[in-house]
Amino acid sequence: MLVRINFAPLSEDGLRTLSIEDFPDPSDWEKKGLVQPRPHYGTGRYNTGLCPVRDSERELFSIRQQRYDSTVRDQAYILIKGDGISRQMVCFYLELFDIFHYLFDLLIV
Image 1 (cartoon, rainbow, N blue to C red):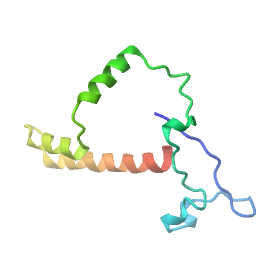
Image 2: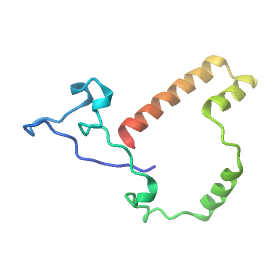
Image 3: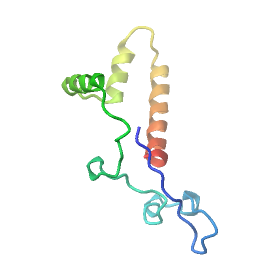
């Protein structure tokens, strides 16, 4: 996981940290510095020097490149057809995945 840490944007007087609650329109968030787009990996902004790639990871990467690229929803459909897995359980996990995906985009990346 790559984590970026940025200074929080401040009010004009510099005394208060701004939040998305100050700007209800999401289109203002980037302009006000509340959300910063993540830099592309190839820009050199991420330091991976302390995390060298292991041989097992290289093998896994090679295997995963050959695998069919499917979505979570595609995999959920396959699970729904399986025995012992209810549609409600799959829907619960899909909702949970959507929540984590949203939080990941907003807070971590």
